[in-house]
Image (tube, rainbow, N blue to C red):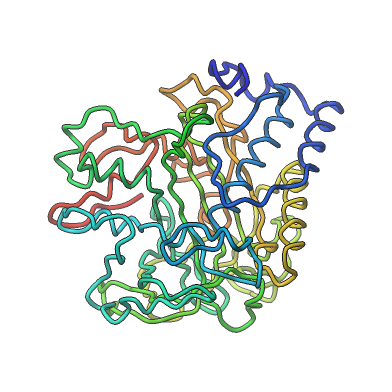
Length: 439
């Protein structure tokens, strides 16, 4: 760890210096290093020897993001651990490590109940009883416990995302072992226990030692249908659950799904404000400045419903085809991040030309340049980050989010209180006699 990381830098992004020729050369050198494809999740970002300028540091954090993404997407064995006998993408698609982690609804079960031990079959609604142990993934590994993808509204209740086939995109929030154990061991799945706990501080990953630290993921899945090239998606077959309400019938239907978006939030010792990484499938959306056909953009669309990045008004009924959402990317992917992407995509393609993982890209890594500012957001870089399929409707700000992971999560609190929850909205899911309104 560099002195900057160890002491907690007080530098702002601007203080790291402008993108000088020398700084860009360093960033390019880091990006050009042969990417290590490993099943080991990095415990913290390694900045030793990295010059304290913004391009070089951003390249180091982008490298950390890709290492994390590859490790979490690594083929999983039947027990959910990485398969040491395989390489990511080898033989095509496979069930991934992150998919075996418990979902948020496995930890926060209404009414407040002790969660099942790590590795247990998932908690599923009664309507999905038939899904028990019939979750069939496109993998050579044995069948795994049933999967239910139940959420369809985006962050801040901005509305659902609907693809060109009228299918609602679904979301799944999942937890690492360190995050799971912290919540379970401290009974934070019980609202009253949260209020008595005191300062919430999830475990942090450290460069030395065995602690990986708390990690939460949020995956966006689209139903694969007409016009979708399945070879370009990481795929799964899951039971898609829609709760009853406002004239919407309860349903649980088996669907083929493709991964289109993936958030990784990682609490580390050097960055207590967490490190925020966000990935997308490369065909999701075109730049706002050059619209073209994409998974979530139809250039032939005409009329009022074709305005980009606007959610359809309620009522919403995910059990029926909805009005497709037109999506464009408002903030371009930075040149330095694009260079890092090219290196990792090439490495993934070299493993197997049929690997779907070559079709994913890092949109951005947001990290605190002032990690010592533990009561704030640590002056994040970059300041604006938006995933087109997870923050579709707040890419330009709005609803108080400012298109920033850490700025949004700074407002996270425990259930029924203004007590800070260490940048995690998970604890708001604690339930006693009903379901909390989620951000």
